[in-house]
Image 1 (tube, rainbow, N blue to C red):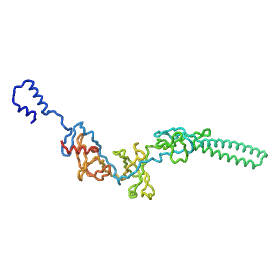
Image 2 (image 1 turned 90 degrees about the vertical axis):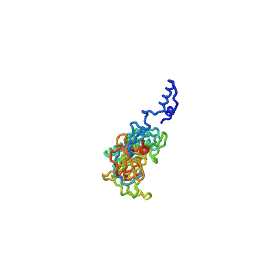
Image 3 (image 1 turned 120 degrees about the horizontal axis):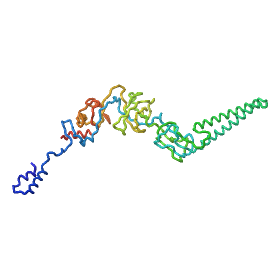
Length: 385
């Protein structure tokens, strides 16, 4: 019985004024619990393995729920690899001439079109090439006039045929020199009317991902590093150094499952495009190159885990390890039976890896399970109502 109520009952009866009676009633209202008080917990349990939440329960915001999915059967443990540029879609651009950088036309991250200027150089090499082309053109014109005169004199009997043959040889030599000088200008993308300024251009469209020049930088054609690197960021490869013991499990065209630390809950697809022809004598590994569907999320130089998949049509159910509750020798997951209603269910695992496990029995494709906050639900279940 409530203490305040006992004190009131045991108090000797005396005449009370209206004020005293009001005070007694106020004391009773404060001491006795209200029949309409809010429950202390917004969770209630229906059975030993079920948890039911009230709508708007605060614990729901800490739960992550996802449908169960299937994947092709993996044939080996995940292999360590790295995301790299697709070399068929990448251009490392060097300067074909020496010079000094005047101004930059592109920055890292810029989207560029094929043929767009990236850098302007002040290059004496270009000026010399233009001068050589002009000189060769003038010499060709002079030798052509000399050849025409000698032919006219030979026809008039004034000049010996030998002199005309020498003039023809000189003209051929001048024409060859002019062709060489013009080919050099065409290779540089410069006309005979140009100056000693040179524009370094990209041969492909893409995104500038690297730049190794600033205004005033001295540029040389024998530089060990490219001045610009342009690539298509949506076309990437995955590179694997395959252990020799796993070679029999990899084949050309085999599908892969790819995971990276940046997106731990996502899986990317890939395919083996080439396998090295020899084993590295030092590492005893074989280089394997794979195409990757990056969906615009993966970045070059990311480390990745690549799992070769069985080429057959067999599939297995996969769940993240964060969804599993281990108790002794058994594993459990929380299945969403209906909104706000979760049931703890025992499952039989097939293979458990670092990030996920495959389930042999206990789950069906499409069922929704708790992938984040399973430990919280298990604690709520142990506490009880």
